Length: 76
Length: 264
Image 1 (spheres, rainbow over the protein chains, first blue to last red):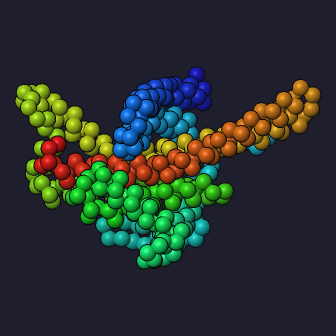
Image 2 (cartoon, rainbow over the protein chains, first blue to last red):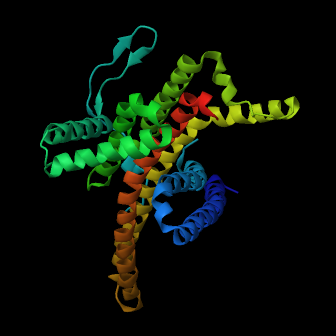
Image 3 (tube, rainbow over the protein chains, first blue to last red):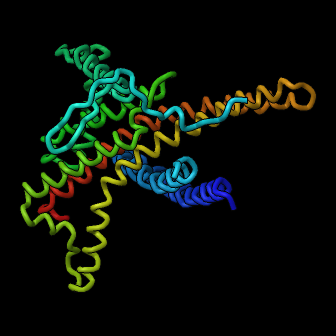
């Protein structure tokens, strides 16, 4: 298998890491919305932690994306 | 058809070539002005200009002063005040600077012809290492060797505690890496995806010019254009959000070392 084909396959495999990121973000925002509908006045106090949790969950998917970009574009 | 090169937009090239300066101990330092340096200077000048315009003391604030007060209130109430508490006041200038710098660099990169400074891993790694160094220095200055109590879980058997301490040490040491890569990955991904959709607009449009059934290419081109509009909206949100998240995580890490004795 020549190196370019292997690069494309590797980059595609690296993108499967984003499955977890999507699932995690959905769980996070779903829980926040459920709690916000039950207790709307307390929702504003937790907004900081919502954004923090969103960034941390999204960064996991991003690490996979960056690995894919490195596999695809870095000349060795 | 021109080649689709998503990574060319991130190339750093020199604008003004200055001779390298020898630094004793570090070797040669290349101080030439690159496009990255030029956009960093532009961002810093924009922030300084904003301070000059908005730092008035009117009791009824004008627009610029109201914006500055909102930003100060965000950092003071939500970030250092909300996350660290009363002991967070000394860190307000640092967190405020981080937030404004990263937000400005991100937003400048979105302008047409703008170069995203924070899409360079060197820049984000520098910011992350600065944050990590400040956390370490503050931790050791405040707590001395009691700093290592941060990693010991309370009320466990000593064997389990050693295992958990190892995991906590690794997770602590990886923080500058994750801080740098989070900002870098968000900016890199945003710009690469926008470039790819832009290349679809042009490519499908050129394909549709061939007439006949290929005119469906214009439909795809229009759909890609709508996608770009949505993506740019997302990119504006991500630009400010990632600055907020970087500042917030800095506050969380500072809170751990500053409030170590207050119940970890």
